[in-house]
Image (cartoon, rainbow, N blue to C red):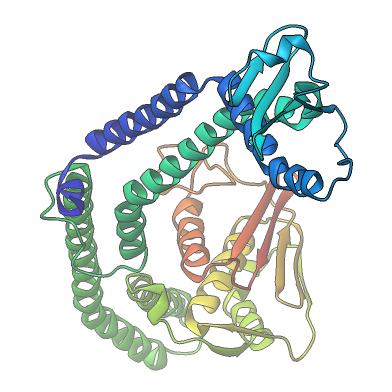
Length: 410
């Protein structure tokens, strides 16, 4: 039976459960209808009267007057009312006057009459009045039990499937089942396989592209450095050669960053990274964008702040934010403040273009005003999500403010 139950569909299981519930309810109703409340009352009182007989017989044998409970009357053949004399031995119910119950018995060929008032049993009325609520309560408890049992059986495979999916275990269970759980398991398995294939293709593409670009970039960088060292000190080509060297170095760093982003975040090596040296390095690299600009760059950071993270990805975030501020701030101030693991980069530039959403950076949006900020900020957002950090952006025509919380947000 249990095997057949597990072979049925969820729809059938729920239907069977409700049918069983209705059967249980109807069973209680039928039992309640079969009970005669007067018969219950008569049985209880008759039992009580019969239990009194031994005590009365003992009193009669000893020749003493028996003590009677409240609402009881006791007669012998001499003082019994005429209305009782015609009753035969045994238990009788008297309808008039009121509700009385009579037990006729004999002792030493003498007939005795024990009369009991039905009002002396008030607990019976409470019992009878509470029978209907008791049936209702039992029905509710039965429904609750069946519901719990059904929900446990129905949700057990779903919970197990969800747990396996969450733990990223393979293969998924219930793929061979013919019910709805089997359909869901097969859909999950297919979707998981498609995602894994997509991620594999993406990682392969990023890895292949990065490695293919490293060689020509190394050649370009080496050639540019050679030219730079061979040029005369007063040559007008020195700035161009320096720019080529810086650009190739930046491209190599971006390639490294893209390779790291293509990995599973859980496989990243995290260490205690000193933050101030990273910030000072990025400030030094940004000096060419600040040349001949009336811009003051202010650093507010203690000497020994650390963050438990990946050094290269942290450097990429700081570099992209600082470079963006230095590129587009024509005058005023760029301020970098570090408080614990909270980094704030603010500037007095023109703010983000209207084509860029400060809460969700998107790359390559078509806009005449967009000059390349979207790609760098998109990489920053990807790294922030990859590391599990949080970033808040406030932008206006008075400038931008990036607040970065450099600790994992669960």
